[in-house]
Image (cartoon, rainbow, N blue to C red; front, side, top):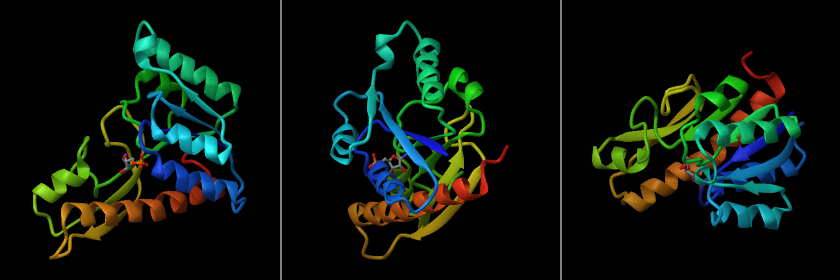
Length: 191
Ligand code: GRF
């Protein structure tokens, strides 16, 4: 299975997934990483790992359709079967969704549908929850609304700070995302 990862920022999830795929433990090939931010740290990580990367901004295009059509072309060119979003900060539009329906997955740092949106960890923290979580889901037209593939609960401990809570959630992401990816690769996508 050919995989592409989309990321806009730090890329710690990208790094974990890339290392896992590169280790050759499951039958997948990471063809490239795409970032819509040219100065994103994920691009440095890709370089270090020797992974091909592409980067262009939505602003360089007349509209989102053309931006996404360019992405679809790239995905087709590299015969990508699965698009893995790892901190990709754009809503997937109809052009990409139509071309890759059921073939785009995302990770979100909360137990969806709780705390969807941009600040899943902080929102859960501010709501003083006893537990939050991590979810991996298929991407649909909404924000963090697609069918859940797998999710885990993460407790908020009594002496947690936002930072330690955040770290525990990220640690769970690094475990869950490769696990789900491996399952999808071995068992196939939903359609
Ligand atoms: C992760 O918390 C992920 O769940 C969310 O964006 C964050 C990306 O972090 N969608 P990183 O860029 O992988 O370090």
